[in-house]
Length: 370
Image 1 (cartoon, rainbow, N blue to C red):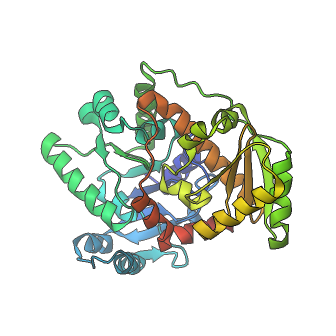
Image 2: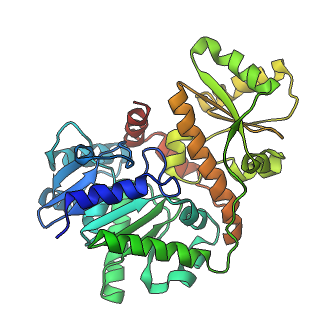
Image 3: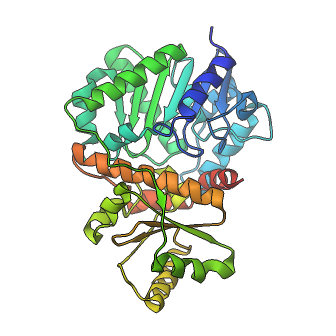
């Protein structure tokens, strides 16, 4: 029989490794016949304790699975959230992960959902489905991108039923396009074995060496312009560069490979639009571009890519700057590695708009900022 302590251990194991989880991303769960314990929304897996999990009634979650909800996405997600709150046993002051129903659906004691760099290099590539089918066959279930929340739950519910009918088993590996992966097993040791096997299979026949991604601080005329422009609004900016960022800032064509988000998490922490500015741009021109960006997007640019320079990160605090930098650096790694699997595959405009306006992700963003 599993234990909550084992759930804590495996949560910290993957949560403390930025190759698997960054910021408040990913979630884990443990369940018995009556209850499920799942990570609370916005709580980082790294360093999580028992107080970071929410316990819910599986019977009441099962009622959500059978309910009918409105077609309107806002009303639907609000009602699902309300019903999920009623399923909470303890503590009532935390919100369970939006993916709780997905965890409850998969018939294994332990579920570990992460967004690993090497796996998302495949999930965010043009040949994602082909690669999964060739490398994993019947060992894995591949699910095309679906808006998270109740719609994804319904999609996964149908896909798992089909998988069970076809193979007479429960999928231990579920790949989600432009999102991440779910791994399920009845022991944490097996979960770890499965993750190791997945990485090994993805590496077969591929050169997945990255350019050095460690960011160093730097100063430029443009970084000073940005800092001065936003100083009166109490926004903080810092500039960073690495061989990896140099690769994508070398030209506008290279920048296009990181110009849109790959996953919902990137939108949560970095937003969905970024700004590319030519090297040597004059102060008045740069300020005009900054104003135009805000007018068009409705928010300040969290990430500015300076041609032949690096990244200028703009945020409300040093802590938030670090989070944006970590997430965007991971996005560059995914894009770089995706070239081995058919090239980068971005989220669509419609998919991006759903995340931008989704209350659940706005809540997670606010928790992450503290």
